[in-house]
Length: 411
Image 1: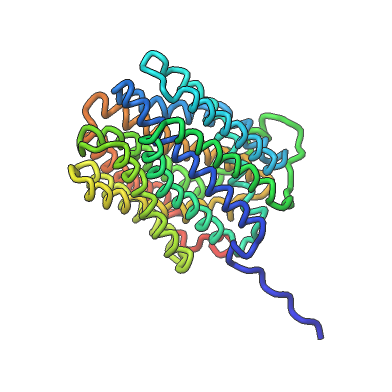
Image 2: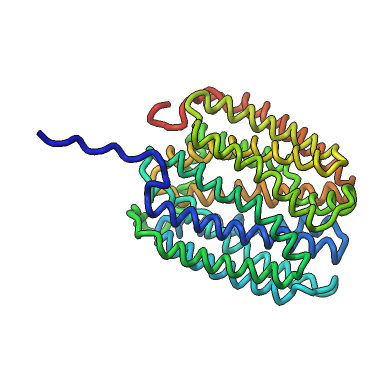
């Protein structure tokens, strides 16, 4: 009598390829956080211009939008590990460029934006490739756990990276950017150690139809469209990351060390929530939970906007991060489980633009509104906007609101 085959593990860390993938995410996310807090502080400290903080976000987002039809098809047709390696080498070169411009004055600040645009181009190709690789290295049973675990690596970096970035930048801008470059090179090694995964590659002849395959799938599926657009518009409205240097310096009367702690606070809340979700995954009422936590994201953003105390601001930001983690886990799991392998790269390219719009364009919105009306109205109006969008989307996408399971097969 034959022995029944063992069920695949539902825990992502049981798979060797995922362990190296997780370490890649950890190293590169740590480096990105160090660069983000260092560049933001440098730009605002040298220029004193809130609008330029928004331009930082725009430079990072624009390449993903301009190259959206190319990045996804590239991830569907070529080795996703290879794409990730190339992108990381470009990011390391950008970190070295920031190192060389560490002591630029106001008249020399513009080359920094050129490097940011190049960094945004590398991230535009990285996003679809990295997001599409995870389903190739773990089975469907472990995908939700993999997404949450991978998010925990990013959130751990979000906790330690900004704090380390602030401390390192306080010692020397060169130390901060040099550390970021070294971490990215470690990430290159980790990507190279991921076993070559199985990948169904798109072999259709290039045409407008194949280029638009991701858009076609997303707009034909109301659950996926609702989840992706909800995140984009809610975070675009409520994002307050670009305002943190202004809050730290002008409202909270703090320095780069406290700025690092403020940048770390959302990661602390998100990491705690990620650890909870890894032990207690969402099993029912996924759609309703998604809308509730997006609304809470807006509420806690309002609290941050009104705060004049460093510790209250940190607590509010931690709750912002916790609420966002629930949203990210539900949205990403739905998208990956519901998307066919052959178009996953193109769908993830669109998703990367949605994420970029919610983050970088959100920073641009916040910086612009802060320049016109001040940082407090910018943060408070953003939080109100996120709550309004959560309520509106619950009515516009009833299929998503009433979705109970994360898996399409059990919808």
